Amino acid sequence: MEVHQVFLMNGGSGETEAMQVQPKVMEVPHVLHMNGGCGETSYAKNSVVQNKIISIAKPIIEEAILDLYCNTLPKSLAIADLGCSSGPNTLLVISEIIDTIHEKCCLLNRPSPEFQVFLNDLPANDFNSVFRSLPAFQDKLRQEKGAHFGPCFISGVPGSFYGRLFPDQSLQFVHSSSSLHWLSQVPPELDISTITPLNKQKIFISKTSPPSVIKAYFEQFQRDFSLFLKSRSEEIVPGGRMVLAFVGRRTADPTSEESCHQWELLAHALNDMVLEGIVEEEKVDSFNAPYYSPSPDELKSEIEKQGSFALDQLEVFEVDWDATNGDDGVSEYVQSGISKLTSGQRVSKTIRAVVESMIGHHFGEEIMDDLFQRYSKIVDQYMSENVCKYANLVISVVRKA
Ligand SMILES: C[S@@+](CC[C@H](N)C(=O)[O-])C[C@H]1O[C@@H](n2cnc3c(N)ncnc32)[C@H](O)[C@@H]1O
Image 1 (spheres, rainbow, N blue to C red):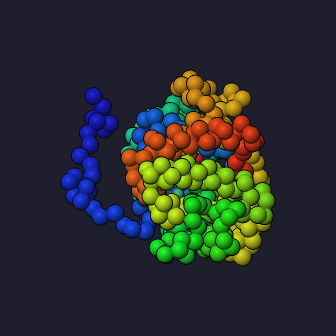
Image 2 (image 1 turned 90 degrees about the vertical axis):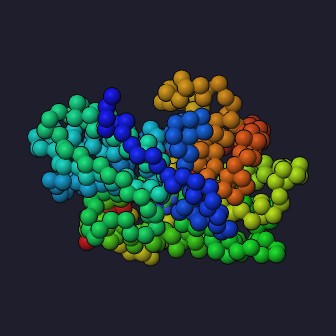
Image 3 (image 1 turned 180 degrees about the horizontal axis):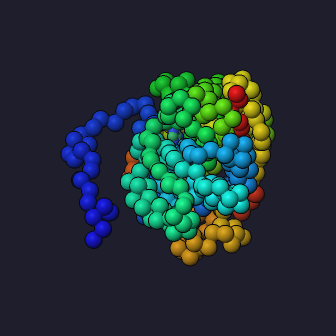
């Protein structure tokens, strides 16, 4: 028995948890989390799309970290991954960064720097799974890289990246993937219960949403993204770098299909359940996703306005909704049985692993199986008639001196 892996106190707060009153307005930082553990509906088992996004952005991450290392040749390197979640992707980028630096050090015949790695996510993230995976990760690093490597110190940092997480000028490199499209809150204009809901029958921006809805979402994105940049500008040293990848859109139009269709189809499934009396209409009218997929111009404009970072690269790339489509890089998932599902079922599992915490909180956990079965059929139908891809934006920025 490995005591350090088996010995743990009973967690939670027992019966008092069940007595907690649910807040009326969704408090995103308390509610949002990817499905934890490693079961059928977990994020760990259903994050192929996000894995693919990391692999597409890899050359940009490598270029940024090498530039940082070669310009400064630091003795220690402090790196943060923001929105790390749990599962196979959590340590992927960190391990790629360490590999890149280690190879460079070997080439330059220099000792490897000491690594300080901070894994950040919201407090409800499954940090227990992350922490349990750390000893094996550390052992692997030592075995692969030898006695002169590192050391590498890894810690978890629970909290929202829309605010300060680290001391002044304590980081050299920041990374975040598939996380910054989540807003800190539902735009306040939409989150107040009104007699006439602003975004009736919809759960995100839609072609039929009034301009006030689109404006409210855009302004929330502006407030959040500028706060994110300001917070990081205080934490990152001058010359430090940041690579961020997240869902965006290519077009200027925030109601374009590429930006809204996933939410539109989920609203379709919910509205079908309203017609059958399974879900209350008021519940659909009052739910709005705390999400925004910006255009490249919206992003550039926020970076310029905030002023602390110089934009080095901005790329837009596409990833299939069903990332297992014609891809041999996901054999692990194919072997795990995901290949036996229809595309719609795989997409539905991907989306469920990400949004279940919020949708379940609002509509009730008891409808989740039914909802996501319906959703998978709607997605299958939609995918048979449309080319379905996520647009992703990746930016590489440098902290100005
Ligand atoms: C889809 S997961 C991405 C996980 C991982 N980076 C990957 O690429 O697979 C998005 C993560 O961002 C986290 N997140 C969302 N908003 C956040 C915030 N304000 N602060 C910190 N983490 C946040 C979520 O809790 C979730 O774990």
